[in-house]
Length: 92
Image 1: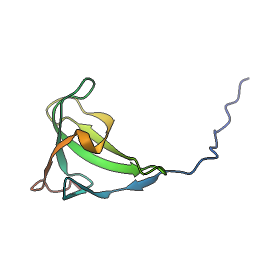
Image 2: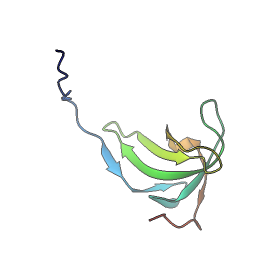
Image 3: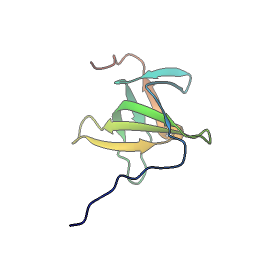
Image 4: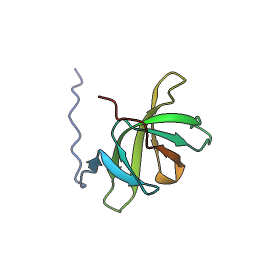
């Protein structure tokens, strides 16, 4: 029988952040952001889940949504965020 072994990476693990600054606004877990539309990314409001800062300084932002469609998980860059909805409260 074929047994699967866990893969252990030798590289550094990414740092996960639940509070980051985007476009001059604090973005907390559960807050809403609007994104620029592009191939593979539907425009609209998405919910911020977390960000990961890679060792080379790149920030990848994980979001779920859009709110008006079936929810899906996407990884975007800071430049893809159009608006941070400051009045949206983080969801519990």
